[in-house]
Length: 329
Ligand code: 173
Image (tube, rainbow, N blue to C red; front, top):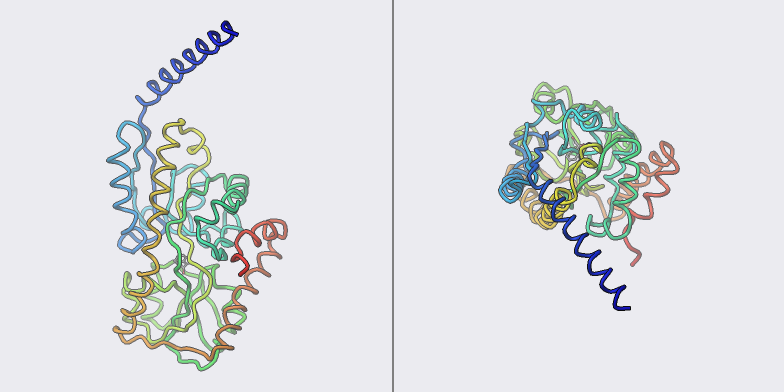
């Protein structure tokens, strides 16, 4: 008995010594991750990310650093996913709708109806990462935007959910739904929306509740249609090889900072309310429907998107759907 205990003590001491040497060796190696944003540098998402990067670098000296390369001028938004997949960059702030060219499933993340904190607990994040690893060669790191429903903004008044005769700017987020509302659609990156509105190439556009002032779209916007639908997904993603190459302390540090980032997501509720008020002040009129029409409008958005997802990737849609659904009341 005594001998066995001694054995164990020695073993533990050895292991501890080993770990110490190991961490001393890796601590000497600081890694810098190159990060790009698919969203504009002066937009709210990057505005919120910058202080986080600053703190990340201040606290991560000798361990891990982030080098912010830039926004859409560095890499066009719809190329960002491929840049992460191939390791041209290590990390990106992006939304799945911008990298359906990597995997169509990327756009499914707009369909989550539970907070990311719940997604971490109920297995949704693991299910997402299985797909992101296998099909995207990437690790899904953190969702930094929540509670930002999408809306239809238009310059042509409607009194029912029907976009007949309207040309609307979209991304994959909105395609099936807006087409079901009889819109003619044209896909553009956010950077082209202002000019498209100015030239009358489009009558309106899809965008979340917040952010239309960032690129001055309010100047060219008359109406917002309520209610909103889906939830804008804006997240940090990382090249899988770069993620796997991180040492244990580096990964622990990254995870700690990602948790801190997600813990700030309470911000978005207030931001949505503030942006609504700001739109009203700017003279943007709200178009609303009666309660039953509003409900069927929103239900239709989800029904159409899930039907599309199930057609696109039946197996993955089936795995995601119960994990994304709101808990039964
Ligand atoms: O409208 C868009 O460009 C879009 O798809 C999106 C997605 C997430 C946040 C903001 C916009």
